[in-house]
Length: 465
Image (cartoon, rainbow, N blue to C red; front, side, top):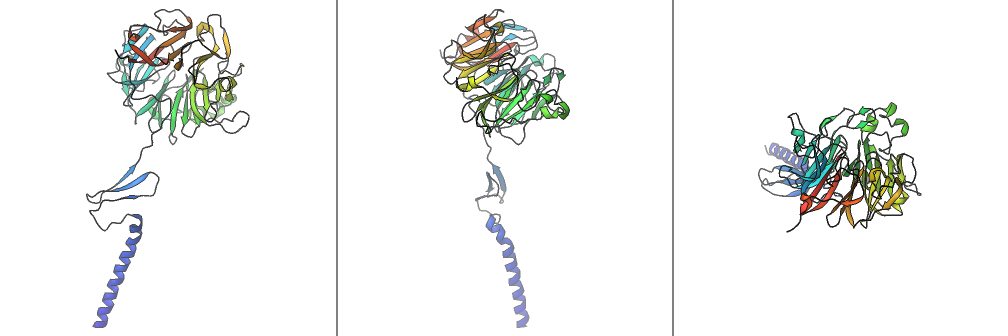
C-alpha cells in the first residue's frame, strides 16, 4: 500500500513539473501572468509596438505609434486664411457658383466656413486644404479632377469635400488630376493624365474618379504636379514619377518609350517608379530634399549641395541649361546651382520662376506676353535673370503668367492678361511686375498664390486693425 501511494505521488509531482515547464517560455516573454488583476507593459517583438496589459480581465491591446512626416513646404496649420480667386470661371474653377463666368479682381470664395491653410489651382479646377486636413474641390470634373460626385447640376461650381483616408497636409493639381499627401506619408490621387493623343488614365485601370493610393509602401514627404505628371519625394530622398512622358518630364523614360510607354505599355509610365540621377562630376547617386514641377518640366534639388537638376521640355530654355535640348533624364543646371542658391522653383508652359534663399526672384525661358517680367522687348532668357522686386517668400507660375509674394504680404503679377488672372481689372498683358490690388486685398496680407490654366487663387489673412 505504501509503495503504491509513493508511486501515485511521484506521478502527480511529474505532472506538476511538466505544467510548470510548459509555462516557463511564456513567463520569459511576458505572455504569462500569475496575477489576473495586474497592470504592466512589456515590449513585444516588432519595432515601435508595445503590449499593453489592462486590469479589466487581462485584456491585451497592441498600440503602434504613428509616424508623422515633415517638410519645409508643408503649410503651417496655425496660419489660416481666406481664399480669393480671379480669372475665368466658366467651368466653376473660381468656386463662386454657376453664374460667375469671370472675375477681373480677386473675389472672396466661401469654403463652407472652413479655415484654409492652402489653395492650389489646377488647369480648370481648384483644391483647398483646411486646418483639419480636409480637402475641398471645385471646377471642371469631366475627367474626375474633383474626386467627388458632381451629378447634381451646378455642384461642381461650389466647394465640396473630398473623402479620403487620413489627414491631408499638402496638395498638388494638374490639368485633369489632383493629389493629396497625408501626415503619415501616403499619397492619394484622382482624375486623369493626358498626352498629345488624349486620355491615358491615372493608372493602367483608367480614369479614377475617387482618391486611390499611388505609392503604397513608401513614405512620401512632398508631392508636385505638372500638367499631366506627378512627382513624389520620399523620406529617403528618392523621387518617383508617373504620368505623361512625351517631353521627358518623368525623368526615367527613354525617348523611344515616351509615347504611352511604347512596347512596354501604359503601365510603364503610369505606375510610379524611381528616377535615377547621378551627381554632376562625381557620378555618385543624387538624393533630393525638394521637388518642383511645371507644365512639361520637372526640377529636383540635391540634398547635400542644394544643386538643381532639371528634366523635360526645353524648347525655350526653360530648364535653365542654356540650350534647347529636351532632357529625358535629370540634368545638372549650373545657373541654378552655382550662380544662385535656389529655395524654390515653379514653372508654366514655357518658362520658370525661381526664388533664391535671399528672397530674390529670377525668371527664365520664353518671354512672350511679358511672362518673364523683363519688359515687352524680351523674347527669351537663356539663364535665370533677376527681377527688381522687394524680398519675397514665394513665387508661382501659370501657363503664361508669373507671381511673387513679398515678405510683407503683397503680391505682384505679370504676363498674359487675356484671361484676367493677373487681377488687374483689365485684360491687357503686363510685362513687368505689377502690384495686385482690389477691395478684397485692402485689409489683407497674402500668404500664398497659385496659378492655374486661366485662373488664379490666393490665400490671404486679415491684417490686425
